[in-house]
Figure (cartoon, helix red, strand yellow):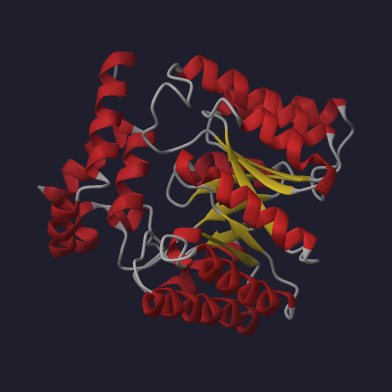
Amino acid sequence: MTGSLSAGVRTVLLGASRNRFLRRSAAKYGMRLGAARFVAGRSLEQFVPIARELNARGFAIATAILGEGIASRSEAAGVTAAYGDVLDRIAAEGLNANVALKLTHLGLNVDPEIAFTNLQGLLERAGRTANRIRIDMEESAYVDVTLQTYERLRAAGFDNVGVVLQAYLYRSADDLERLSSLKPNVRLVKGAYLEPQSVAFPRKADVDANYLNLIECALAANGYTAIATHDEAIIAAAKAMAERLRLPRSGRFEFQMLYGIRPDLQRRLVGEGYVVRIAAPFGPDWFPYFMRRLAERPENLGFVLRNLT
């Protein structure tokens, strides 16, 4: 697929991820659309055996309950309770898994204090079983409140919380520098939302260059770096950076990849002794996530179309 065509398809897919009519329509077809390739079940019960299998093959896991942008206190309370169940089940099953979640899923758009209080309670619960939670990064409009929440939690003494920075945003290098004194546990991603040119690099080459810069700066600091990519050139560059810095293959950084994408590459990295954590979300509200995964790799559209025939 040519660069211009791929960019056009990506824009359409990202726009579709926000379309409520398409979201409702997709629910009729469920996993038949091909979402089962990227989504680890519709429920916690379906997720657990998938998680066991991933652990047995040497992978760590980051899971999430799919959903975002809830609009009431009661919904936020329900999501928070569900995440509590996830943390308890991870501990009971002895899974090598942690949780990544969105602040808008915990009530950010209702009241930032609701989201903060809900996350604080979940971090306390996770801490009782030596587990961690990462705050996912959403659209650019949420970056400030997300980083402020992270800093506030660290100031309150929570060390089992991480955050995400997106390489396609111009500001991310400054944000990484801002967090450096905290020795953060940070996941670096390219970014999967449709952003205006005023805040994000429009060219892939510039995003990649910024991503490599962020990786190098994060690895050179004293925090923990999760490098989330399937780009083999970037993975090779990250390996070389770690070698130059004499970092061990576990303990200071890890690679993160998506469930269902490049399992061959995932296995190869585990075989080389690197920590690989698979993002394996679950839940019935899978459509926006699924469309963003297709936008990242528009060639996966062929896979979806085959499932519909």
